[in-house]
Image (cartoon, one colour):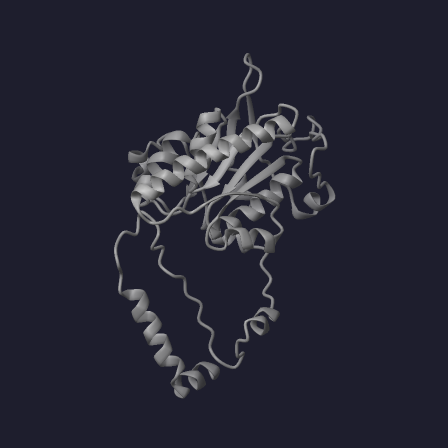
Length: 291
């Protein structure tokens, strides 16, 4: 988590004469718990004389969530930024389980817009309409905060917040871990000031999107960060009425509404058919129970 969040850094517009470099600097979990400062309280910087303890001034950070996985990815980032004293405001699109996950994980958010469908024209309209809605929301939020604009906008593959931030002249950072979403990256990488990706993605693959000179890579995969504090809850099996004595298989459906998945693939339905066949075979269950 520390490696990921430490890459969320940008030059934010401050005094016209001087630009201040702001970064999310992290500490140990115990220090974070002891120094949590959430809300509109003034952020106190650590002593300048302590080596390695400098922390940037308090910022207003805007995070947009447009799909279910983004809630999981951003939840620990939100927690760490708030623990460092930054004010974090979250907007979320009503799509898949995004809103439900926000509520389940306690992510305070403002729901704005919904998915417009899989057609290209519908996606274009959805991008324009929701980006405009985000601009209106951000302006209203700034007025409610006494004129304090956002210092940074952040999204994981969200075109909407990148476009809205550009319209508002708010520096933005975009994150992703799949380099072949051509349309999405051509928008986000060109408008964002910083592009955060896993080290596993070769930098040269992102040059065509306008990401050259903007990349901030982190080690490992995003799942390693947001699952670092995961603790299994056995009660979930009872809530879902799942037989603990049988093998449990979890699969993810294909992203059929995404622009980068504009084709039908028979692998997933074949997999489901094979799993159904296996589930009906008593030998399969006994084999997995005995190891």
